[in-house]
Length: 261
Image (cartoon, rainbow, N blue to C red):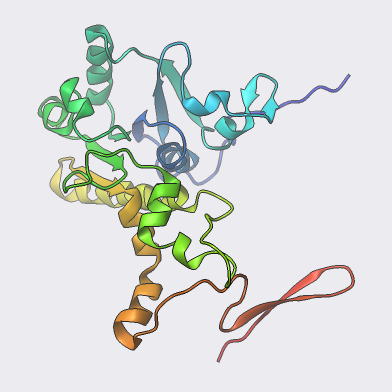
């Protein structure tokens, strides 16, 4: 009989820079959970708020499963505590408000305005929790003509231009093999929260962070934009080719050759 053991905790580390920091996690799927997982890895206490019954969407994403748990869910939700709260119930919103009062950071990825309707927006919570660093993750930001639209990794990858430069030279645009836009946004979110914690040490007050998929992915293409703006070189699909890096196949493996001048 095969017995599989797994843990949602990476164990004690000697270096825990965020030890004592409490994070309220109102995110689901990938970008938000990836960011809060990193905060947990660094020592923060992360409390994940999920929907009653189904929880985070990714709990059902599979196969593969580890026991009854989705491997996808486990991959971005380690080092977290989890509670089920009905945010459509006034008792649920009151509970989240009380948690916000004792937390340092709140991360959410609802559509702009949705949490405001529940009384859980930044303006409302900052009145009762002035120390709170409130980070919003959206598709297109808090303002602008596209802000009301939901955001998805593949759409932001297309709009940003990432898919335009990905794929075979004589073929159609393709999406990367992993959700790079979501992952990049998660990394930007984690960095923004860390910076906000330092800023709070100076001011004593929290602030509202606006992270979004499109801006994060465009930022990752800064060198592509620089080539065009400074040298007029328009990006295109090259397949696996690169100006200074190439792969070479041998009898039993692939070798990457990189040139640095």
